[in-house]
Image (tube, rainbow, N blue to C red; front, side, top):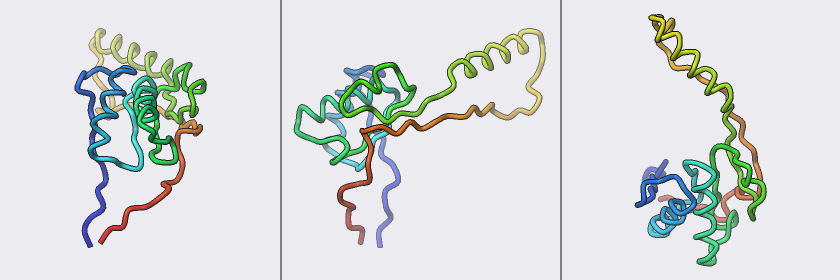
Length: 136
């Protein structure tokens, strides 16, 4: 039995996390399709979906797409975008607090990264895979 591939990175040749970058990443994805894609942000996810729809590929029937940041438009596109919401206010507040403490000469108390909670907002761009590949 051969191993199941766990991930494959698809990047935008443009190198920018925009709608256009998502469209470019979709073109690369077409050569090595997976059942799901997690985009850098919602803009890229929306561009990715748009490029697939132009080519007759259905989201989520053919591929699930997840964005990140729960931007304003995520619930307005078709299909509505499943996304991960990060606590941006807490993220910024924590970063500024740590930066000010560092500027005052304080050192990290634990040496560990600060982990903030996220929330998965399930909408219409994800579903169970329609067909599972046969692994032998």
